[in-house]
Length: 414
Picture 1 (cartoon, rainbow, N blue to C red):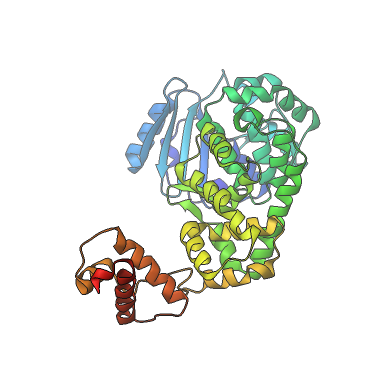
Picture 2: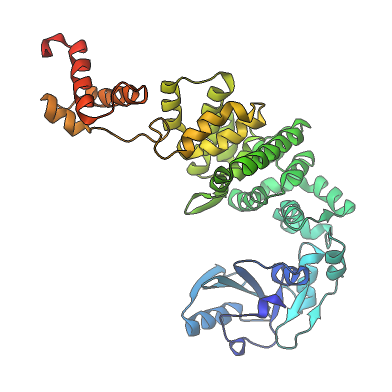
């Protein structure tokens, strides 16, 4: 099993028996390798004390996740280990209470035996997500959405009777805490080939209660257009695609590419879209990306922008520029019509896209002997506009331009 390689802890510190369950076992059977490994361990009793001792011996982080259900986390560099007390009299009982058969396989760390009472290995080989039983989905409705996320990540299919059960239970997802639903939705959005399953969540009305998304066949087309637009940009301007795959913030793993997919599902009205996002507790940073898309996309859809309009547009969109380009193409704008904007964005010396100041507000105050006031900021903006129009190019010319500008406003300064 792949997860046995380079374990950061001593197996002798664990009780007997102890089982690895869930995703690590599934991924090992699939031959999937993850950069950061998450291990889920099950012990018959004393899970919190086992975790606490493991953390103490290895000077690792300790997090108490659920004292009632006896679940704790030990955090190592590059790996997290969740240790839980088995649910039932045996590990087999525990496996029968999980969500899907592919996640209901245990590996005994001491004996090296695999325990697979529900034929999960066979479903993995057949690329199938199959529920263990309907009641298990009712017990934790987040499992409904998890099926679609895992189908996207693994390129599996959801077995028909399982999908039918999910459709029938879809409204239960609204009983789950928003933060938990958001986590699953983020995972789904960030999966490169997720569009098919995003559409499926809408068709099966899984997200209707949270995002108030109507069942609409146009979403399939909209997401397909976005994916094609991204691939076009990735082919011609890979630097923009790389930016789209970076996290929005250091503390938020969501990428602009995933938010771009999300915008295709939201209302085009800013107030309505904001309400949809707030309902699911999206962060202010994620909401700001959507806000910029809704506010500033129309500018490049309607007509060609003048240099001064481009300056203000670039200033407004900032790092969201690559996403707006992809969305513009998805909305029917030909790439050739966006080349000049892209070239300016990719040129670090472009004064339209990446302006640098010839003079500061302090320079104007000192050189023109004027008091601080709002006119300083306005003058700096006019200086930059004059610079991109080729009217000025040096600090001295900028000072003189500002002097003439002030005189035109107040002739007494002459």
